[in-house]
Image (cartoon, rainbow, N blue to C red; front, side, top):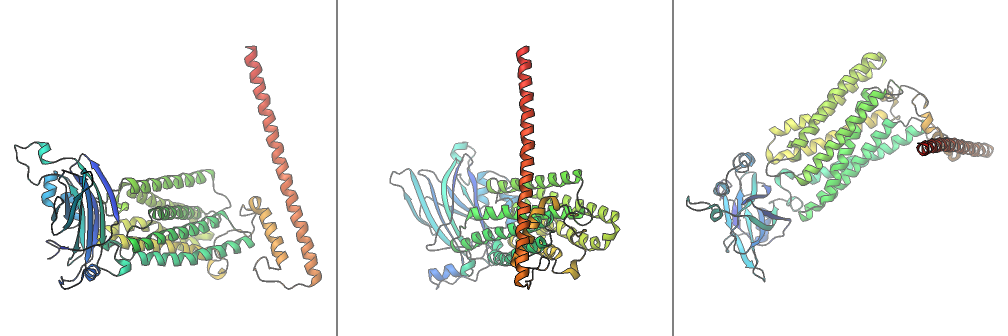
Length: 528
C-alpha cells in the first residue's frame, strides 16, 4: 500500500525505546512523532529481520485500566496538515475520525499481537508492531484517544468519551543503515555532523592553547583573549557531550538526555562569550583604547545577563513545555524568537559601536573596514537561519539548521584565533592590540607578578621570552641567570607579602571604625 493510504504492514519483534504516562481528563492526547524515509515496494518473501532492515518499523505497548477502550491513532498527512487540522482543535471524535489509521487495543488484530490483563485484573496491556512502507518522506504522528468515533445526540458526555489514563512504550526505526536506523528522517546526518564538529574543535582547542601561551610570553594575554579561548574550550566540551548522546542514540534509540542538555547549555555559554567579545571589540577594547567607559561596561554586562537568562528560559521550556506536536524545532517557539531578537539587537549594536569607533579613530579604518562586515554577517546568521529554515522541507530542516549553526561557530572561532595568533604578523599586524606594553593594555596591575614569574621560568628553562626558542648558554651564564631568576622570585614574593599585609591593615582599620560606630550607637540607645 502507498503512504497516502495505509503504510502499515504487520510485523514481528523489536525493542522499545520511548516511554511515557498519561493521566488526564482530556480524552485525546499527543504521544510522539517520527519521520520515515522512502522505502521500496513491499516484498512478501523477505524474512522478518530483512524486512526490518528494509522498511520502517514501529512497535508499541500500551497499558490501560481494564474496562477502558483507548485507541492508538496514526496520522501521516504531513506536518502542516497535522498542525492546522488535527492539533489545531476539534473534539475527540473529530480527531479520531481524522486519523489515517485507528488501532483498537481491546483485542488482537493484524497490528495488535497480544492483549493480556495483569494478575489482579486491574490493568490490561496491549502489544503490537508493524512495518512502515512509504514512497516519500512521511511524518507519523501518534496519539491516544478514549472516545467514540460517532456520538449520538441522545448520548451524554460520559457515554461518548472519558479520561485518558495509560502508560505507553514506543519504538520507531527507519529502513536505513544500521548506524542511522534509530534516527528520524529529519535527524539523519546528526552523527556525522557531531563527529566533524568534535574534530574541528579538537584542533581549535589546541590552537587556543598555543595562542594563549604565545600571548602570555609577550605579556599580552588580555581579557578578550581569555574570552575567546574559553569560548572555544567550552564549545569543544559541548561537542564531546553532544557526540556522547548522538553516538549512544545511534545504538539504542534513547541516547543520554543529560549529555544532550549539557551540550546545549555549553553551546549557549560559548555563544554568549563570543557575542560579548565581538561587541567589546566593536567598542575598540584593546584595539584603540585601554579601558571602556563605565556605561559601556554596564551595557555589555546587562546584555550578556539578559542573553544568559533568555537562554536558560529556552532550555527550561524545551525540557518541560516544548510541544513536539506543534513546533518542528524549539527555535520556532516564543523563547526561540526571543533569542533571535536578542541576536538581531546584538548585530545592530555591533554595527553602531564599530561605526562610532571607526569614525573616532581613523587609523583603524582599514582594519574595521574588513572586520565589521564579517562580524556583522556572523551575528545576523542565526536570525537569517531562522528565516531560511521556514523555506526548508520539514524532513530536512533540523539537520540543515544544525549543520549550518555548527559550521558558522567553527568559522567564527577559527577567524578570531587567526587574528589573535602572533605567529601571523604579516596578516594580523593591526590586531588585536593598539599598544606594545602590558601596562598600556591595562594588564600591569593584574598580571605583573605572573609575567615576572613567567620571565623567570623561561630564563631558568633556557627559553627565549618572545619566540619560545631554546637559548644556548655557557655554564657561567647559566649560573648567573639562575641566580638572578631566584632573586626575582624572592622579590616578587616579597612584594606579594607586602601587598597582603597592607590589605590586612586596611581591613583591620575598617573593622575598628565599624566597632567604634556600633559602640557609639549602643551608648546613644542607652542614654535615651
